[in-house]
Length: 407
Image (cartoon, rainbow, N blue to C red; front, side, top):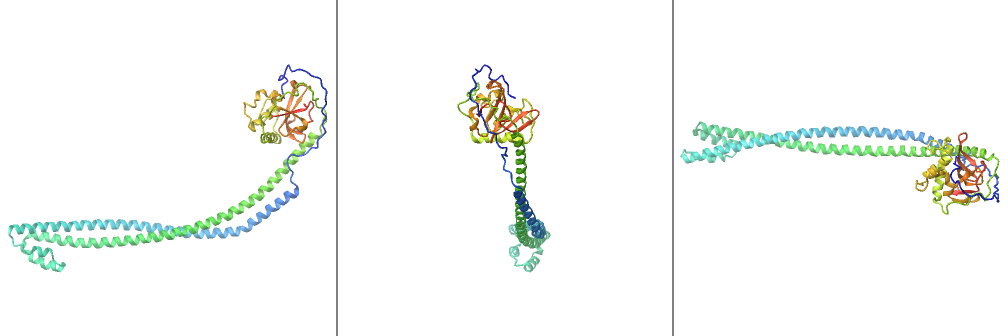
């Protein structure tokens, strides 16, 4: 309730003109969908549900195809991984063979170097080693064997070196053959990996195409069914809300005393701001907030400004705070003088969002109640602890001041 201490000391004036209002017809601010509209929405929802049921076969076929492609993709992937493993083995084998070949070639080089030294020594010492150079240039294994027999006279050391050369050359030839075979095997393995990867990638791409197709079918069915259900639920909720508003409006419309309004010449009625601070959008937002609290059947608790409960000025304050008025423009502490903070508007010019005031006397110093105009002669209010928050006729409370306040 409003405090009567807000405007103590204001001058009194003579009551002269009486504002007479006509009763208003109770109505709902929310459009009430008809039962036929709701039935049509239900029928459409059922039709979409039937379409979804029929689409199950299509979904099942797509799912089966997806499963087959998944098996194919997994098999291709397994082959690819197996070929990759084989390639790793081939690479290691080739590397090992190449190392063996390198060692054998080094041994041949070492043997050749030793024989070269022996030939040089024989020449220097005049040991008759004149045919050794031709032996080094032997043409093939048989030619080498023939020439080696000539060197028997060179002694035990020479025979050993030549034997090592023969063994090293044979080992080098064997190592080269192994290395060539290993490289060829690696090349084959590389080609098999590339082929397996191509098959695996192709299978995966087929699988993804089918997944996308399946997802598209499912998304379309869900979207259409959800849309139909949402429309039906929305219409039902709107109808329930409209019925609730009608009940509240009918109850408010049964009140008496519609002519019990203070005369226009009450004390301080003309005082107020010369301008207002809100736009139509903010006023609509404040009305929507108040409406939401009333329809939620929030309780009245003196001094509270939400969110769980409100008193009359607390509801007004919270509504316009939600609409964007900050504390520099809208102070809860001074809510008792809202009348002086708003622009005067005759009752005949009220728009939704304007504030309505009630006073014990034709004097703003005795204002005791404040509400938010809803339109069509109705208001959203936090009434009292017994009745809570209401959607009421503006004439349902005695002492209506003949001017509203535009915030």
